[in-house]
Image (cartoon, rainbow over all chains, first blue to last red; front, side):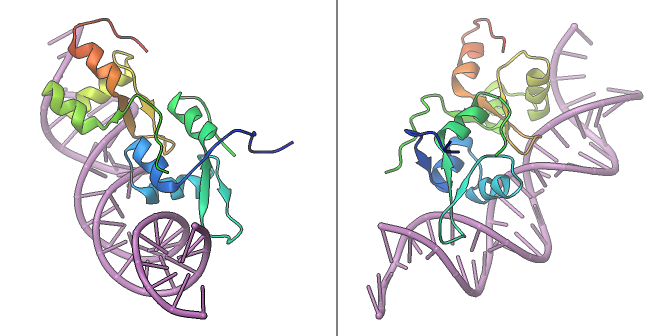
Length: 65
Length: 65
DNA sequence: TGTCATTAGGGTAATTTGGGAC
DNA sequence: ACTGTCCAAATTACCCTAATGA
């Protein structure tokens, strides 16, 4: 089954950062340390964040990839 | 492209402290003791406060998390 | 193919937190 | 009973450069 549920929009680092009021770099750090779910683009450098994962954090629930 | 649906914006500890004119540490203490709603950033130490929660307190209404 | 805003990584400084005590 | 301050540790922000992707 898909790790990313269908209908789950992917957010850019800038969008996630804006939602949490943190620096985009901080979001990348969360992804690198597995503190928030994220997928890597084929290029292997840029990431996108499933909206559902972001929402889980906003709801104070556990996260993880 | 930049869609940030989450209707409830998040405030930083400093912003909340300024609104109430108290020390940021006091705000953190309120969060620890569940006197004001807050979410913990994935980092695990810093918090953000839903604007709606702060507004409820400012309006003298009950709070709780 | 070339341009260009965005993103990630490294290093360093600043901010924030928790906990105990006053 | 509640707040502000002191401390050490963890987290985050800002600097720069290189790579990505539309």
